[in-house]
Amino acid sequence: MAVAEAPELTPVAPPPSASASRRRSILVLAVLALAVVALLSQGLLHNLNYFKTVDEVLASRESIGASVIRLEGVVEPHSIRRSNVGTDFVVTGSKGSIPVAAVGTPPQLFQANIPVVVVGHFASSSSRTFLGSSIMVKHTASYIAQYPNRVKAPNGTVR
Image 1 (cartoon, rainbow, N blue to C red):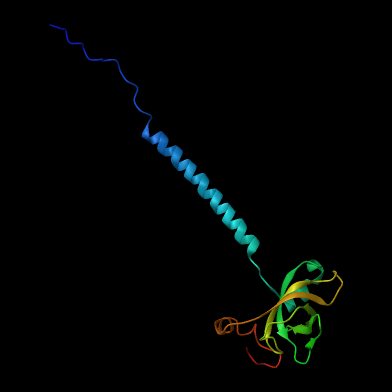
Image 2 (image 1 turned 180 degrees about the vertical axis):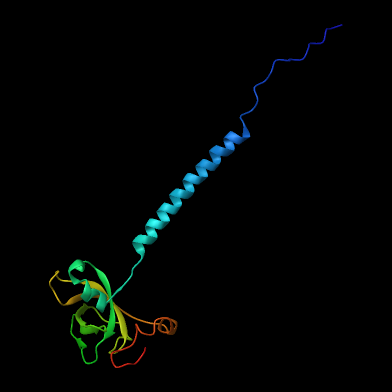
């Protein structure tokens, strides 16, 4: 009769600790989450496009220089002059006004006494005329309800 072999009784190394691999997984996920949050926040911060009112621009004209901004104001009555390259008009605020020379065709709803946002820049830090590249007509009824004093035309009408 054959003698049965005795089973192997030498100790076997335990598998890697589950808590160590769990910690490593959590660390990797945390680093990935931080990277995603950093990328999203940078993208959102660089894509926010605030506008400056006529009064804000007049108060900080030197610091704005010739940088591209969004200028918000109300189109002054009888100031619109159309040409073959664009439209010249004046936007007003409560403390002053800024002449605008915009290239291209303005939106269909563009008219006097309405709030607009004009994307553009001043030709130089000493220039008074704002050179616009895009005109956006504003506002929805909900915006007017939220900011009633911001969208009043000089004649007192609200649009």
